Image (cartoon, rainbow, N blue to C red; front, side, top):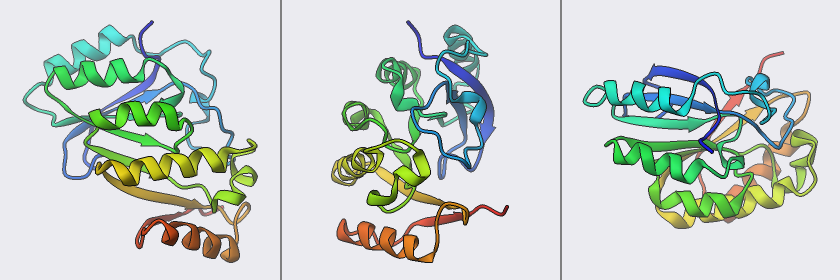
Length: 194
């Protein structure tokens, strides 16, 4: 069964640093973050809005014009077909990037060798994840995924969305301490205004 795609952005300059890219929005997510801007993608059971063959046809027509393809979501790691999809895109000559929150360390480990860049969403200090994701042990999975990413040598960017309804200054201090333990010294924080 092919990867379920809930949307496609044909051209972006901001989702894959230094690359002209298309974005594939993968259907489904196993977390329920209140500030998610793609709520319509959360149910994996929702029918795809574009077929995998249409994605391939689109990308074949853009060979030589686009540098890469970003797998975003939803959460791409929840679909078992992600690895095969990434390999297929690379066979077309495109660089590949992943936007993820690290929901599945096992799947992340399998796809990392085929990625050129990862945008990793850090929700909170790992002990505080459940208040953002509403899923027990989500912080443990995110922490395991972060370790894999940092050890992989793949280029990355860590990002945090600060929603004052969910996090406060002390939460950010704990998050900073968590990241410092892994040698991370800079990250991008996105402020959600309510």
